[in-house]
Image (cartoon, rainbow, N blue to C red):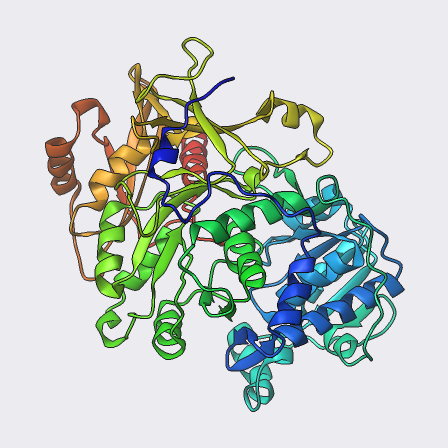
Length: 562
């Protein structure tokens, strides 16, 4: 399938059209950073700092220990941790040992955890002491053999490390005591071992899997996305080329987006290691803590999600904090409302642009230019070495300019396939192209626009309605903090449009008020028929609003009403 690439005309001179992907294992970038910047701070975590030399050595210690327990090349290791030094050490330690990382959400319920461990056939896990009771139950249910347990206090400075157990007990009403014995191992004790000699694996970057990244599971069971070393290296190199003004070894990056989400893994952790940036890590998002951290530690890069930026903008004391250190942000995981982009840039003086991607592409495929031409409402243009097109269902070929169709991707960051799922792999990978399932279009200059998920499109009374268009309009209302629009079952129209709205603090509103507002800005068939005001919306750990969860709620209500 031949495609045109009008976007290349807008590339700044500093960004190459094609990049040469390094044929090396992902872990080598940590070796390089430790060699060139041994004393530079790699991680700042709640007052504790770790240099690149220390990060490298501790990763090797874990690798050596895993190999001593019998880990073989290709064995899967579940990492169930928040953003903390242990998460980075574990990730690279597993790769140094020849294992495959299985990123696991710490918020998983036992049923979800059991499914992922069984599907991935993980034999090792690294997790928090707080999560150990849940994790230990998995030994009898899955192939899990060894659990390595750590605590947040293990990497806290004095006296925070002494006070932490009391804080933990107060916040969680639980203190878990774990002993280093049998098939349970203490992370802190492993780190106290002598300098190791690791038997580095023989890695084929194109073929060998570095990561199993499980999709969100909004449609059916989660699938394990197989990302090779080369997939992840390619996407990280692309990101580095896009951020061409950022200086290797000099930037500091705020790490709020969780590493167990593929966006945080690439744009925060792997980019930082490849470029020897300082990672400023927070284990969970709290608006006040985030504002304090920015004001005190002055990060220059701030990858995030729209809900994070929205929460900060709506913080009552935002004006008290100096956010001027922020030079640039790439927003991912969900559509970025124009209003949020403009307000955040005004507050920080930095640049906030929207990007686009998916787990199956490591994840980024498109972004707006940070310091050059950009278009409001667009997800930008394809990254270097990345092809993209709009596939038309009308004629089975590349769509015309401004014609709606499915966004398809081709590039070195595209996954090898789904783990043990040939049927789903063949359905999404066609002739070298990744079918994203997203509906969009490309304009004359090669800028792409995402209209909506193919599965999220609402068909009401015969009309095709795209929720994102309605959300953009409602976000412009001065009383709206967050909004999501979904198609809910309707006996007459098939589906009808419903808006779920979180109002700004101290605001009140009525259905009539929003109905009148929507009718001024939308065609009649797009105007929501139902409005529901909520205190909060269901979200993933990375802040993506779970539209499907709301639709399932509506279906359950219908069942109960019958």
